[in-house]
Every structure is written in C-alpha cells, then in structure tokens.
Amino acid sequence: MSPTSTSTSTPASSDVLVIGGGIIGLVTAWRSAQRGFTTALVDPEPGGGAAQVAAGMLAAVTELHYGEQTLLGLNLASARRYPDFAAELTELTGQDLGYRRCGTLAVALDADDRAHLRELHALQQQSGLESQWLSGRECRRLEPMLAPGVRGGLRVDGDHQIDPRRLAGALVAACERAGVVFHRTWAERLTVVRDRATGVVLADGTEVAAGQVVLAGGSLSGRLAGIPQDVLPPVRPVKGQVLRLTMPRRHGPFLSRTVRAVVRGSHVYLVPRASGELVVGATSEELGWDTTVTAGGVYELLRDAHELVPGITELPLTETRAGLRPGSPDNAPLLGPTGLEGLLLATGHYRNGVLLTPVTGDAMAHVLATGELPEEARPFTPKRFSPATALSEQPA
Ligand SMILES: Cc1cc2nc3c(=O)[nH]c(=O)nc-3n(C[C@H](O)[C@H](O)[C@H](O)COP(=O)(O)OP(=O)(O)OC[C@H]3O[C@@H](n4cnc5c(N)ncnc54)[C@H](O)[C@@H]3O)c2cc1C
Image (cartoon, rainbow, N blue to C red):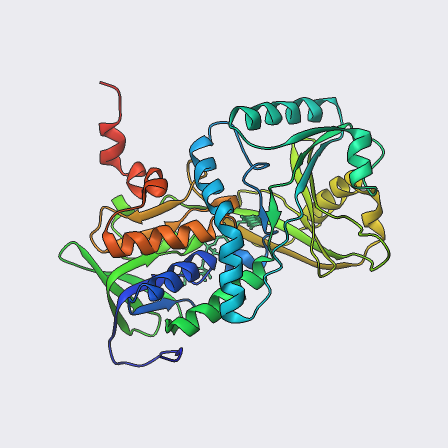
C-alpha cells in the first residue's frame, strides 16, 4: 500500500490509529504495521516534533537520577536494543542514522561539581553500571580541548549517540514501506462511543475510525479534545534551547565523545557528530508551549559550554532552536491502555525519548497485539496516575 495524504470525506478505518508522528508515534505505527495491523497515523508534519531539536544522547548511565531507578531499567533495555534497531532501520531504508558508540565523559569544573559527580558515580556503582572515575589530567588526555580547570570526570563508554533528525526521517520511510496511511493534518477530537474510543475527527471534519487509538502527541498529548478528564495524560511541555556549531575538519577530532557537566546547577552538554556538527544543549524551562530562542538562553549555553571547552567560541554557530520535551509527573513515560477502552498512550518520554524509541516500539506492538504490556514496561502504565489507582495505593 502506498502512503497517502488523505483529505477525503469518505470515512477511513484501520485496526490502529496513531495520533502524533514524532519518533514515538512513528515507531509505534511502524511496529504495529509490521505485526500485520492496518495502521494509520495523523500528524500535519510526520517526523517533526522534538526530535528536530534533540541532541540524541543515548545516556542511560549518565542520565541516572536518584529516585528514577525504575526508569533506569527501561532505559537500559532500550539502550541494549539500539545496535540491532539502528541496523534494522538502516537496512530497510538505506539511511544512515548517525549512530555512534563514542561514549560519554561527564566532567566537574569545581569542588561542588566534583562532589555531585562522585555521588552520581556511587549511585551508578550501586546500580551495577559501568563507569570509571578519572582525574582532571586523565580527562584532558582523553579530550585535549577540555578546559585546564577540569577537576575530574566520569568515563562512561556505554552511553552512545544517534542523530534524531535522521532517526525521524528513517522512521517515516519505514512506516511508508510498511504501508502506514498518513493523514497529514491535525486530529481535532477523539470520538468516544459508549465509553469506548472509536477514532478521531480530523481538522477538515473527516472521521477516521479505528479499533485501537494510540495517543502519541508529545507535549500536546493532554490537549486533544474529547478525552474524558480522568484519562487525560498529565503531560506538560519542558522547553529546551539548543545550539548547533560546526567543528573544523583537521587532523584530530575537536571532541571524540559526548562531553557534559553541571555548571552552576545547569546541565550543559556537547555532542560531536561524525558529520562535523556539534550540538550544544540544553536549557530546561517551564514556559508552556513557547519555543522562542532567547538571547539569555543562547548566552547561558555558550557561557557554560565555553567554560568546559574554551575553543568552541572559534566555531561557526550554524543553528539555534528550541523544542518541547513531553514531561510527566515522575519523569517516566506513559505506555499502554488507559481507563478508556480502545485508547492507549505512548507519551511522556521527557528527556529520554530518543533513547526509549526502540523499547517503546516493541512494548506498544506487544500491547496492541495482546492487550497486556510486556513485563519491562508494566511500571509505566498510565493507570498509575488515575485517581482510582492513586487512592487504592494510599496506606490504610
Ligand atoms: C532540547 C531537547 C533535547 C533533547 N535531548 C535528548 C537526548 O539527548 N536524548 C533523548 O533520548 N531524548 C532527548 N530529548 C527528548 C526527546 O526529543 C523527546 O522525548 C521525544 O522526541 C518525544 O517524542 P514524541 O514523539 O513523544 O513527541 P514529539 O516529538 O513532541 O511529537 C509529537 C507529535 O505529535 C503531533 N501531534 C500532537 N497533537 C496532535 C494532534 N492533535 N493531531 C495530530 N498530530 C498531533 C505533533 O505535531 C508532533 O509531531 C530532547 C528533547 C529536547 C526538547
């Protein structure tokens, strides 16, 4: 079946309808079609969304935070899938995803940062993760462009990277090959008949019916009309501004791995791509759906990145952009059936959506086929936020 851009008045119908064509909606639609479900996807611009801005760090180990050990399990499960996942997509589409097993170096610039990094190292060790403590001198031996003031760091060879724009493009191509029908417009409203989701009404008034509807609308997931209040996903936008610079082509690499640090409480990272692009990110701002690039945001990123790698101020600044992470109350995704029959969620991936793409595709295909989430994804049921579950989990 060839991909279509529908704007017809004939009611369309499919087994599965995915709302949202960011990387999460696309991987869900692709895996659904591979399982033999007739699958449609609604998005005015499939392959757009946060992946157009994201850095693409696959950072299960360096992104570990206290209280997020459950999420760690899912992050690691997805990181393990990445080599095969990337190879499968490349083989299918002929597209190179910029997947690099280059590792990550998290460094400290002062005594406070070093104490913070030591704590992270201890947490990683308790969690059985591989990371190695390095002195400042050892860090600079690994990455000569680092500032002389670097006080120490953590070498994490298992945290890799991918180019999210290429990933999004390849997923669109994979969906097209698998016969996913594209409706290149907005879904205006969810249709609910006798307490069951039955499809959506598109912006032009067309009704599209489906056996199962997956809402993968990123930071907009809580805004679709027609969703009953008690199953509305508690997802909010968290703005991130990012810069793109170009590294010189010369004898040695400018940076050979992702370098990151916390500078005065703000996270800053530099992700060098094989293409010569250097991604510098990212701010974290709770400002609704605003995606303005601000002078202050660019200033802070350049100031902090310059403290880490002074040589960056010589590089051409080629792009500035802001995107929205789909944040959830516990920073973990919402996957699988909701309290409304026929409506499933694949959203709330926050700062790890690129990393979590492979495991999300597999979990959603599994739940669409069986009605049950696979074991590793069960903690991420949207029902953990439903009022009934929250009440029943309160201590007596
Ligand atoms: C600055 C920044 C840096 C990041 N860095 C990393 C990183 O290094 N590593 C990592 O793993 N993750 C990173 N992320 C997070 C990652 O990009 C996101 O978690 C992921 O892209 C979310 O994908 P999504 O498909 O759920 O949502 P989105 O990308 O937001 O896509 C949602 C799509 O749904 C569509 N949509 C919404 N509502 C409707 C509707 N009613 N009808 C039709 N279409 C609709 C939208 O048009 C959009 O295309 C970063 C994010 C940002 C912003």
